[in-house]
Each structure stands twice: as C-alpha cells, then as structure tokens.
Image (cartoon, rainbow, N blue to C red; front, side, top):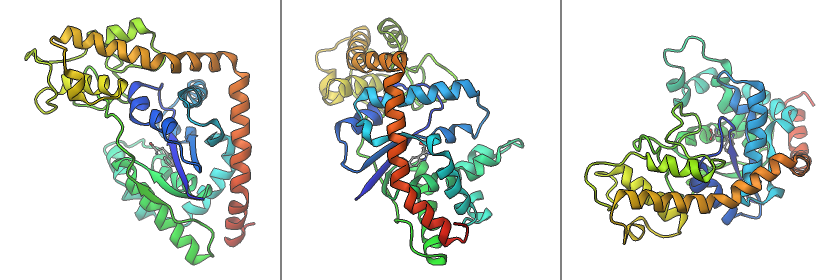
Length: 322
Ligand code: TRP
C-alpha cells in the first residue's frame, strides 16, 4: 500500500481556491490508497470559538463528500483524538526543542507575539503524528508545509533507530498543479480561508447572486484589455484562470472572444456558479440531513482506527509504555 495523505484544516469556510486548487482534483484523480482528513485539532493553535470549530468541521467534511472525494477514504482527526495525541506525545519526546523552534512557519507566526500558544510550536509534531499514525508514504504539500514533512521523516527515522522499526518513511510530493486562485479584491494574495477581508473570497456556499456581485466588484486595471499577462494584469489573469479552470481550458483560450471587463466578469461568474451548483446543493443537503454525514463520519473513524491500531500499539510498546 502506498498511502497518500492530505489534510484540510477547518479554519474557515470552503472557498473556490480550495475547490479548484485541490479538492476537485482529489475527487477526479483518487488513488486506491488515498486518505483525506479534516485536521480540526490543527485549527486550535490560535484563539478559536468551540461552536464555530464544531460546525466548520462538519462543513469541511460535507465539502469533501459533496465534491466527490471517495467517502471511504476520509475521516475527522478528532474522532481519533486519543490515537493522534498518544503518538504526538511519543514524537514530542523524540523531537528536540531546537528542531521545533527552527520551523519557519513557527518563526514567522510567533515573531513579536508574546502570547503565542505552545500548540503553535508543537503543531508540526502533531502533523508528524498524523502522517506516521496512518502509515503514510506520500504527502502532497505546498512549499510552506515541506519542512514539516521533513521533520516527520527525521522523527520517524530517529524513533525507528532508537526503539525499533515501526514507522513508514513518508515523503513530501509536489501536488499536480491545480488552479492558483487569488483574492478577487487583492490579486497579489492567494484566496485564503483565514483572510479577514471577505469581499474577495468566493465561498462554495455563496448563492449565485452573491457570486455574481463578488465578481462584478473584482479588482482589474485600467488597460481594458482581456489578455492573459499575469505580471502586468494580475486581476484579469486571475479571472481568466478561474474561467479556464471551470471550463477545462487554458487561460489564453478562455480569453478568446471576450472583449470587455464586464463581459469577462459575467462569463466567470456564470461559469463559477455552474461549476459550484452541484457541490453547493449536495453540501446543503448533507448539512441539513445530518444523519448521512454522521454515518460517513463514524464509518471513516472506525476504518482509520482499525488501520492504525497495530502501529500505535507497537510504537507504545517499543517506547516502554504499552
Ligand atoms: N498543516 C496542513 C495545512 O495547514 C494540514 C495538515 C495537518 C496536514 N496534518 C497534516 C496535511 C498531515 C498533510 C498531512 O495545510
């Protein structure tokens, strides 16, 4: 088995960047041993509201199911909270303070912040536990997470040589490129769940009228020329990339026949609304119904527990506590 593991952190609602950039691809090209999980324990490293986290966890799980990701391959991290935390502790006791402190993401996010949570420092170790618990061989991640997968490798190697062979050595892989969707109000930035400005983010659950309004207000430029030149016209290029991604073509081809920004914005809004409609409807059904989603969630937890139990027990035993 070549397990490939991907996580989605419920730090906000699902948006177009999540869908076109990653989740649609997960649904289109599922591998036989893929695992997808909602990493809700990772959404607690900064102040959070418990009820919002609970509902965002359901929201992201429903998003995965509604997008067509095979439901047999998914689970929610906190449904295996004991397993993940037990392994995380073994790995915290394998990791040095220096290694944790050197993580670039920690350095960036903690700089100048005196009330930074300890969880922000140890979060890459929890991520290593996610990866190693499930016997992961490959982890598709962006550049910002590569160092964390490297840490998981270091900890796996150290544990295996110190106590005995138990963990599969994971490897970071570059995900096949999906669309890089940018913020409509600020095309210099990626569309992001944790952005404070909502105007430039198109959510999967936005109704078509809201989608249209957000695209009408999208930032463009004064050149009034519909061409794909990202360096000179980042706003227009972003709209063309979104249009191309929704219609399965290239940004250059998507630009053909469109003369003005108004037409472009209308075309993108329409394509996005059409692409998102089935996902949105299925998601609303799942969230309203509740029972089906609960069943998927419970079955996923059961499978994940069965898959990981022997490895966790062996690791506890090797470390002298099992
Ligand atoms: N840290 C990842 C992110 O912010 C999410 C994540 C948590 C993850 N645990 C993981 C991804 C394990 C892959 C494997 O995007």
